[in-house]
Length: 55
Image (cartoon, rainbow, N blue to C red; front, side):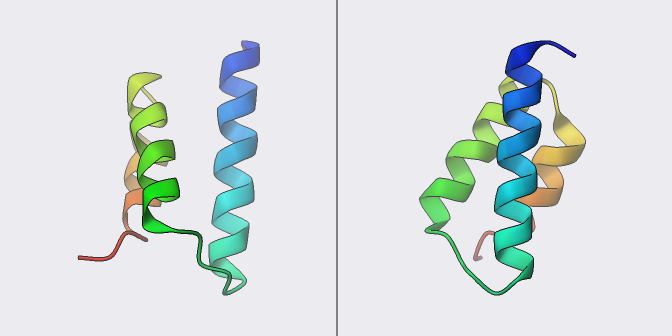
């Protein structure tokens, strides 16, 4: 796995754990990671994280 993908995976896992533990990051932080994941064609991760965005 390329280093960029490893970094995105780490960020995704960290943010997902924070959210699931009840620590809500700012929606813009979530959105920025969703965009980075989509640019890297990690659509499954991006969609899963986007579910945490407010409506």
